Image (cartoon, rainbow, N blue to C red):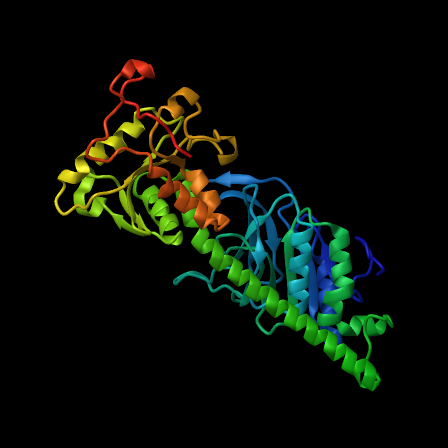
Length: 423
């Protein structure tokens, strides 16, 4: 590749590569290149960086970085910087060269992604002087999209398809773009430029041997199969995440009904039959009734922004004592307390156990399980661990009709505690 710099002839160039393209750099070199490409009957090929320069902020569009002005009357592309941690994904329906560019950007991504918006020039309003030429028609096709489905890299194509403006974030590795231009973009969109340069990257298919043609088609088909398979896998991953994300969020950050629903789903996944007691008895009972292999337990679900208070086990004990007096109930084998605690902290910074005071923990008589631990068992599909924790560890609990706090509160130094935690 032979570069042409500012002030040099651009009419015979194969493409434009500019990571800062706009009024500051001048569009005259681009205009000469575009005229030359049209005379040769070639596609106008531009790779433009977006977002370089000073940013501004307003109440309507938020933070805005410098965008790209498209040629003639086609409008512009605006750029809004996205927060750190955005993980773009490949868009659907990409051709081979677009797919390759998207993959390269994901593997060597810039520091900042920008949300791209195509802004068409507005037509003249009724009663105003007619605008000529009228606004042009074009489309910004996404190559990479963020989690909301908005483009962060794309290709703008005007009506008729005689030009392709690939828009990438400012800060993209120039070597990445140069290699992609030569290896993928020019053979796909401007093969005539490679023919003029006698590039080994392009060959006239009509002059290929039979063996060359067959092998080239095999390679192309393998690439198409790979891209279809990768698209299918991405779709499968998205479907799995659509199921896992709500449950993961509920067990780690949920409170109230959201947390109850997540615990319910884990128990059902472990093979238990679960009844939502709030829908039957309101606040007079525990949150859930879980049944498995002939055992029936009450499940009380609680949350705490910080460390959980030591009064939570007493709430489960109260429900166990009042359970026999509720209409239509059958005896249960015990109860389990599930707690989502220290919600304000990142999961990795939370205490490993619900209660870190060993004297208090050893004074409990029924299981107390952290919701994060339920999540670990669920994501690893360790259903036996869930069933052991919820159903097997209740054997030492007192029958619900006689379960009471320690008779001698001084024995533990804390009134209202249960006698032992079994694990």
